[in-house]
Amino acid sequence: KNQVEQSPQSLIILEGKNCTLQCNYTVSPFSNLRWYKQDTGRGPVSLTIMTFSENTKSNGRYTATLDADTKQSSLHITASQLSDSASYICVVSAPDNTDKLIFGTGTRLQVFP
Amino acid sequence: SAVISQKPSRDICQRGTSLTIQCQVDSQVTMMFWYRQQPGQSLTLIATANQGSEATYESGFVIDKFPISRPNLTFSTLTVSNMSPEDSSIYLCSVEEAYMNTEAFFGQGTRLTVV
Image (cartoon, rainbow over all chains, first blue to last red; front, side, top):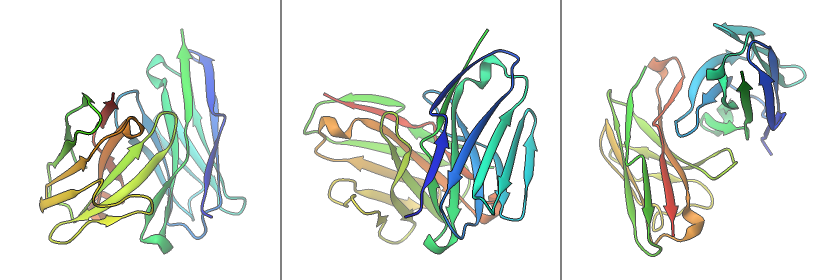
């Protein structure tokens, strides 16, 4: 069964600190792996998209990495800000399933001053 | 990119009633997707809405419960019928097209509470 698992489930950090969120998936093959940020009461917003041949991709203070051999991805947030408080969702697109998106359960990040 | 307007943003409904959620996109798209996000859970695909054809429903979701309309390439509605408290959830519409660099864009969601 195609699955996407994220850890930790929740995380609390102080403003200015860095953090790394993890994503393990069993989807194979896959078209791309995405990280989304979902603020409370809002829809998810794309942060990064990586194909299987990409190892890293950055978007400002967000850097995603991908190891297609171990089927792991991480999202690193540098110099966290209060506005980073949100849920971060790892999503894998599966080509053998008409590119259906498979969502992880997310990591709830809270940044405190 | 795509801008999606979804409404209502939230509603509180009596059990047994129905609610229709609207989704308007600022560009023409082939497929629109409807998701449900239950508290603390990930997004679950309800159905894919293609213009000019019947929506395709995922396992566990049926047309009688979640009828969908797709009258044109920029608009879709999802109705949650005969609601029960178990239908309390966030409902989101989404679009994704190849010309959007395979990004999926989401509406802001409709937070539904059934009492």
